[in-house]
Amino acid sequence: MSGNLALEPFLIGQGVMILDGGLATELERRGADLSDDLWSARLLLEDPASVRQLHLDYFEAGADVAISASYQASFEGFTRRGLSRRRGVELLQSSVHLAKEARDQFLAAAEHRGETHRRLPPLVAASIGSYGAFLADGSEYTGDFGLSKKALIDWHRPRLEALLGAEPNLLACETIPCLVEGEALVELLTEYRGTPAWIGFSCRDDEHVCRGEPIARCVELANSCETVVATGVNCTAPKHVAGLLKRARAATRKPLVCYPNSGACWGSVDGEWQTGSGVVDFAGEASTWKAAGAQLIGGCCRTSPEDIRKLRRLLLNG
Image (cartoon, helix red, strand yellow):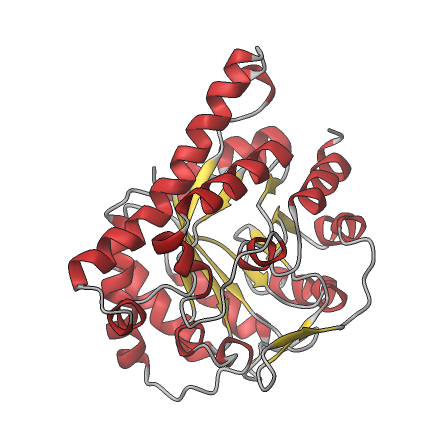
């Protein structure tokens, strides 16, 4: 599946594509201990069934896309756990396989209920988190990791190739905090044309990504790469999203993606989520994002299947 063919059935048939919500934070809410550098990827090793179940819960809630539990997975992180390179590849690919298994289970249940006509078959996106996520120090919210474009390309390539080996429908390059990492990903994705991708940037206000560059300058990178079929923002406070989308819309005609966090802020010093924008009705904000141009809409950290259920009901009337 290549190019906009991945998105068109949803965007033409529904107008919007519903993404899933928070993965690691929801797993933690359900009792998982993710207190190490692998974060949600720890469960690929220790409790894959819980990851599969959460993907299934998001499909049941109305998500058209499941994003894999590979956001903070890295070869370096697996090596620190004493795992071989080969085992690291297997775990990365298992993140995609778990989402596919959940999709198969969802579709089988829908067929049993005679409901296959009600929904387009969901897709699976392989998560490609920022280099800053690998550092496990909150750098995906600052962009202060100081690597060159070439160094970032070299770091991202092996993980990208491993994930592509599991044949996801899409690649979700997410929580990218700076222009240089966006440039690196666009250059890298130009080499891999078989699987469409989106790039979501993490932002600090309604005009700038976390590192300080204008969001318009970052999203316009997508214009030069056919592989990048959508771009926008994720893991950003909801209060900033409408302004960011307005600026992004002026810089690109590609579909815009937005999946904000709940409004809480990550404290990199104490490693805790702190109250942020005070948004109470997360899904209620979604109509504003759609009006501002977003066509791929979901949630990020501290959102849940219930948020996605409400979001789908609001945007698609059921």
